[in-house]
Image (cartoon, rainbow, N blue to C red; front, top):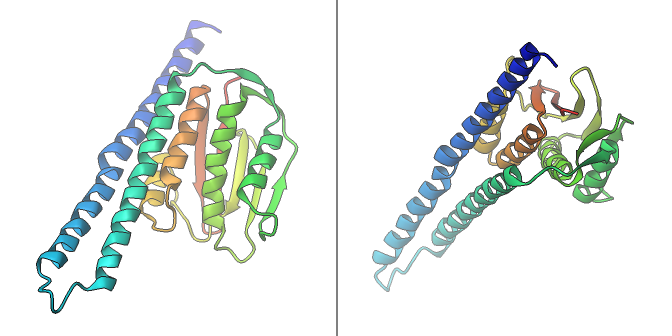
Length: 238
C-alpha cells in the first residue's frame, strides 16, 4: 500500500470514528434526557395526586397506576441505553480475536434464538464467503441488527428476512412495513427514527452497538429503506 492509499484509509477511519462519536453524543445528550424528563414529569404528577387527596375522595388509582407504568417504562428505556453505552465502551477496549467464521452460520444461530419455531417469519440465508473477524463480536452485531429487522417486519402480513451478499458486502433485508428514511438514509437518521418510535424499544441503541462493532473491525455499515423493505449492508476490513 502506497502513501496515498495509507492517507485515504486513515481519512476513512477518521470519518467513521467521527460518525460514531456523533451518534454516541446524540444518544447521550438527547436520548438519555428523554426518559429522565418522563420520570420527573410523571413523578411530579404522582406526588400531586397524593398531596391533593383528602382522605374522602382518595387517589385516582387507575390514573396513578398509569403514571407509575410510564415511570417504569422510562426507567427501563434509560437502563437499556446505559447498558448499550457500557457495552460499546467495553468492546472498544477489547483486542479483536479474529478467526475465519461462517457468517451464514452466525445468522442462522441468531435467527434460531430470536424467533420461536412456530413464528411465521420466512427466513432465507444464502451461502456467502467467510470472513476474518471476531466471532463473539460479530454474533453480538448480528443479534442487534436482526433484532431491529424482526421488530420492523413483525407487523407485516407475511414477514421475511433475507441474508446474502451484494456489491457492497453482506446484507440483511426485511419487510419495512412503511419504515422509510427517504432518498438519503443515514445511520443517524435511522437511529433517530427508531428512538422516536414507541414500537421500537431498544432498537436505536442496538443499531449503535452493531455500528460500533463493524467500525471496530475497520468496516462500514449502510442502510437503505423504501415502503417495502429495509436493508442493512456491512463490509469488514480483511
